[in-house]
Length: 194
Image (cartoon, rainbow, N blue to C red; front, side, top):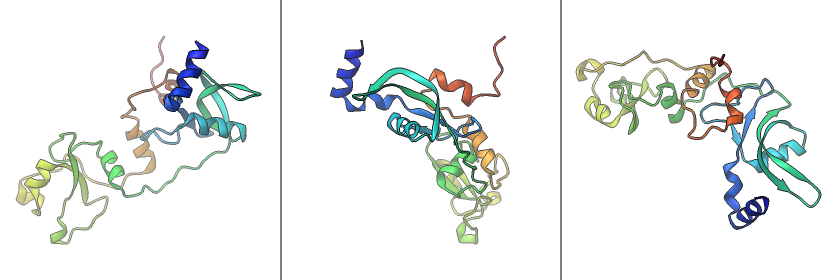
């Protein structure tokens, strides 16, 4: 079994890319939920050797050097606390995350763009309060008209999100793969089995 892994690793250098490490802040919370704070196994091993992280959980796979055998880390905790940003950057991704990746006019998911509530042609500015995620159908329907003139309304009021709010929204969108060793650190407020 061990030899098979080594042979597959040598023939397929990307074999261990399937073993990312979940990175937790010193308070045992992920640095981010969406995207999930992950490091490659190489970065996790390097940080462990530089004494910047503590390894909390490991995969069954090992890596070897001439003098050392080490299990691949699956969860690492930073030794120094990284203070989260308070200000949220106004980016397309963060806007979609705030709006939970759905159109703020009809609720449809997918094929999203963004729309100015007060059109730029009418003096609307590009800001958290004036821009929403919109599907291409609703964006085309609204065009450069006001909401009232277009006969449309917003599903919820717009506002500038806080960093904690975006982290909480990000928890609703887990990645396709969650390793078993990560679960306790990602959903610490989930109900425990009796």
